[in-house]
Length: 322
Image (cartoon, rainbow, N blue to C red; front, side, top):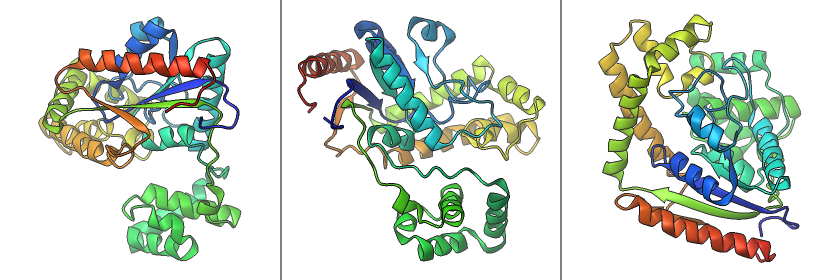
């Protein structure tokens, strides 16, 4: 059991983009009376449907989904807010007698919920962030990372110097609170019995699925979706618009690249993102039950279904998860 006093079971379904988490979670939720809590940092935004691969309206009618369409693209939604909202959704699902499924590929969201990450409640300071970004442009990202290493070496060791957003957030917390962000991030395991399930796929097949998904997004109207977002005043400086798929189409609509190049970049950057996801969802993580869905997705589903049934039986009996 991950928490001291369990409120009930929580099943997490993780894995790389395009591996098929959404479809499998939907099937499981239908089979065993469950509801889905999204762990996707892009699906929180309203009006960003195609490029974030949200579940269809029909599927959301069949199974309740939580933490989708939470804020507008120009609104801030912090990791602390996500964690609090996710715990609230999970508790509500359990209270109504359903099984919560935490599903997504945003590693930090997954860890925030499953590990109970301590998240500094320091509100964003737009002026300070602007100053830090300006400094990064003048002196380079390495300069900010060196500064962070001086005031919080533990945090700096865990953040890539190229990830300006995370470096700046760590500095912001330090400057606003007077405490290193690493001191404020002690994890407290949440009060759930947790089962972690991972989906994996042979890399070349996964890349093929990524390419096919990008083509489907275009056919569904991704370009028009981005054009509509721009028309409503949303722009590239927003975190929401910086995601893979949106940024490249904005460049296309602005005339910087043609559509063919935008599509090539979306596919390329999605593959790179998948490789980054591997650092969050490691194949050698002993807490994750991995299932390969490269060739026989149905056999994998049967195995997963049996695992879930056994886990829920143990949870009902008050036994710890394995």
